[in-house]
Amino acid sequence: MAPTLSALAAAAGCGVLIGSIRQWHEQTTAADPTTDFGGVRTHTLWALLGCLAAGFPWALPAALTLVASHLIAQRFTAASAHRAPGGTGFAAALLTVLVGALTNTGDLRAAALVTALTVVLLGFKQPIHDWTRRFTPADIRAALQFAAITGIVLPLVPNRAIDPWGLFNPFKIWLMVVFISGLGFAGYVAMRLLGAKAGITVTALLGGLASSTASTLAFARQSRAEPALANHHAFATVTACTVMLPRVALAIALFSPALAWAVAAPLAFMAAPALVFAAWFW
Image (cartoon, rainbow, N blue to C red; front, side):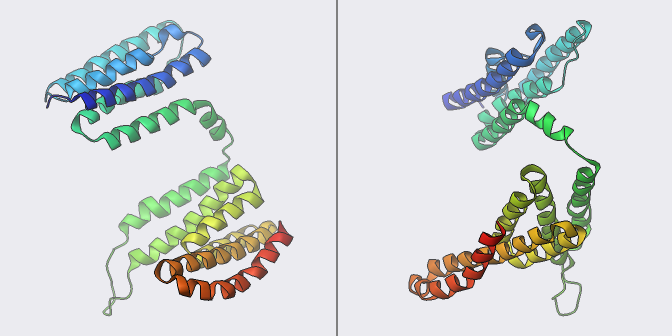
């Protein structure tokens, strides 16, 4: 299918964005900018190449092969010049061609998403490296545990009732385990990034919006594992349960504004002790 003008414009725009961040990075950090994988003009042309090539069954593989061959040759040139080339520029260049192809298929949202993710990953290279250098064995262990619970065990659990009454669904039960573990993992990450008090508070606010019961169970588990932070987890439990009150009020207001006004005062009285405790704790 021949590309439309809007597809070509979208492809060029995506190429400009990726090329701009790539060229900025090379100009500000590279020791030898002559061995980079291209800037604004190059990535724009690659995106247009992908858009045009997607209109022919044989052209897109040929375009990818051509670009990949060019990049591999550049990598050997950089290696012979005693400059260790990374793989990020190689991947970004191939993604630029594929993004251009996506615009020709009419899937502009996917093209925009891939472009945005590519730009973010290219632009935040140094912060990402600094962040990963601060990883500890405990961080890796927590991430692996959550990955195992979510990505390995959950798909293996049968998603059907296994009792005669149709009440016991192992998948839904394990989904609650995943949610509670996810809250714990999110709280751990937030504490590492924001500190104990702020991290637990953010986790409590988000967890309370989803499920105050699951949040309470998650914070109880964390409190048992980290007794030194018991007060913080108590505050988080109160916060998660208090967040439930405005959530209930909003749900009532959507269906009956008059009833929402009627229950506003009781809900406010229920929230008052938690607000006093929060002010004292903070």
